[in-house]
Length: 256
Image (tube, rainbow, N blue to C red; front, side):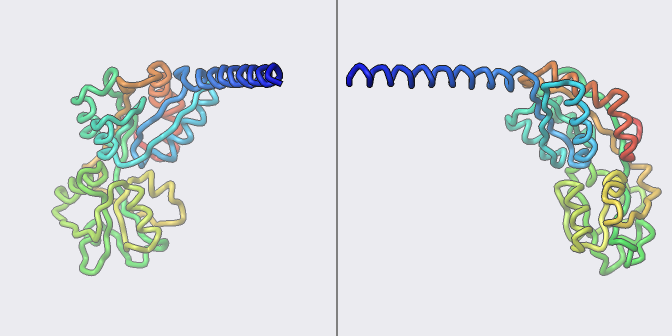
């Protein structure tokens, strides 16, 4: 009986060793440098999701994961030690914070531009036709917070038009502004042209000609702390190359 028990224990130990070895092989696959995490501005969610699918198809075995949020939040997370392989900001100010902190591998590359537009409920029931209409008494307006790129652009439009807004809330990302308008929690909001386009019939867009004076430029860079530096550089090159430019242009982004 003791011999049988000892043989059984040996078999179990061998099985555990084999499983452990196989598990280790699987881990090697995911740690081979082909999985990357991209910190990207919230306004890039739709386009970058599509680009990731194309990138993965052209780079078998690779995998791109995202953290989408306001650029200022992402820059703060990186400065506080969050791990990522690539950072794509909706403005150069927040990219400069990451560069100045010594977190980048190489210099950022500008890859797109974007401008603001007004969005309202479908059909524009409040009859908002100009930027100044947003300051009418009783009009519930939502904007991005000043530290967020879309909020900074809003401030520049206010300055150029001499119109001071009194938003009922200031959001930490442009998608939060859009969602509040769609949910009926505001009469109007200021978002990027690409967000309004992506929302389709859920909103009505009202052009803001003055927004041409407040264009945001988007830079992207591989990060120095990347665990997959080659794949990170390849993704940056993919976004800034022909495939990336085509997808971004279709979504309404401008040339950098």
